[in-house]
Amino acid sequence: MRSSLPKVLHPVCGRPMVAWPVLAARAAGAERIAVIVSPERDLTAGLPEGTETVVQPEPDGTGGAVRAAHDIVRDSETVVVLSGDHPLVTAEIVSALLETHRASGAGATVMTVELDDPGAYGRIVRDGDGDIETIVETKRPDEVDPKVLAIREINTGTYAFDAEPLMEALDQLDNDNSDGEYYLGDVLPMLRAAGRRVVAHRASDPNVNLGVNNRVDLAAATAVARRQILERHMLAGVTIIDPASTWIDAEVELASDVTIEPGCYLRGSTRVGSDSIIGPNSTLIDTSVGEQARVVHSHLSSAVVGDLASVGPFTYLRPDAELGQGAKAGSFVEIKNARVGDGAKVPHLAYVGDAEIGAGANLGAGSITANYDGRTKHRTKISQGARIGVNNSLVAPVTVGDGAYTGAGAVIREDVPDGALGVSSNEQRNIEGYAERKAEASDAEGAE
Image (cartoon, rainbow, N blue to C red; front, side, top):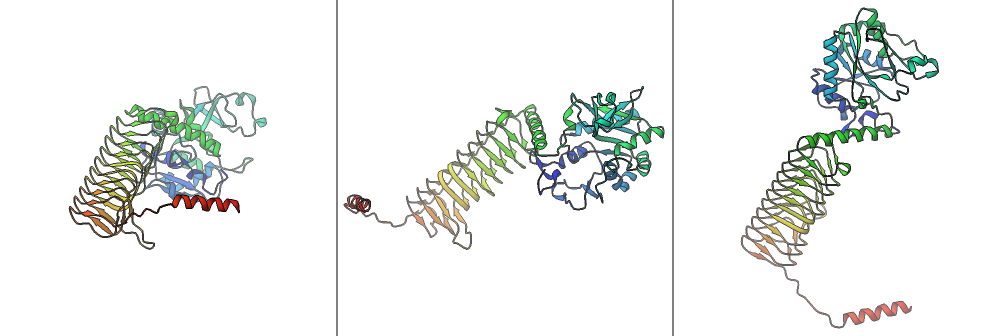
């Protein structure tokens, strides 16, 4: 990956790569999930809660990884082995693998796929009964029988085992091969020699084998995951006008009858309620949007938008911005750490920070809450039904009372009582002949 970040922590549609197979196993009913890690790699940040980790002391192969989890295997009945860099294995795929395993009574079941170009993947060699006889590694194709190379069915590296025979085979596993590694696939002939069947579960989706080893692979896996996420939402009743220009992360939740217009990116833990319209060209990050709301051409991060509220165009809702029911944050508005009450309006060209805007209040164009004195942030309170004039600066801490008004261009430094009008003096003076003198000064500078 050429990265300081461990490979399996690279995100796929907003979710760490390793979390995909973990969550798939959990959804398929796994009672205990362990991720095998190397001593120098801390994967905690990418693991869902309740996931165990087991240290593999040295990188000695897939068999060595499962041997490191000896105690977990011993205490289990059925063991499923997944690859942390295969993010496209779903709960449905894991469940289907287990169903085949249980129905066959096999000691081991290998998930396989057929590829038009099987490349260097291990080939599945079957016996006369259709069971798996062996898996032939093909990393050195000049050492492999051409008839084996012609086989298109390959090993995906996903297995289901009965725990007891797996334990016995792991104890006999050796690393007598050109790589000096313990291959998990080498336990399969041992199981057969012990009289246990080894069968294949052939997956219909070749993407289960899409592993990530570099950023090209990461982009390919992300593209497939993205398409699957969009299809899942559309089949659940969400209208996505242009899937090609829409990005939705794995953890996003959308209610039925939501409409996503072109150019939108919904990230993190974003939630959108029914009948809301998002976009075009909007980004929502860890944001909650209620029902029948509208967000247009805007950027929202860790914000809350209530039912029937409207945002944008060209609005920035920063963390802890909250719009109540029917509230409005109009064009070219920035709001952070502030609540805009039910039905209140910040229609355009305004900055509202560290503030409480009461229900039904209205802020005129150019309104600013001056919340920072150079050392400390202070809050502004604009009470219910208040009317703030155009181009106002409210210097916090300050309160404008219920139903109060402020005049155009006012700088409000003191509280305005309920129902009062707050103004500030700023007498206009007209300086005659100013434009002529300005032009003469410019001409003189040019002559020099």
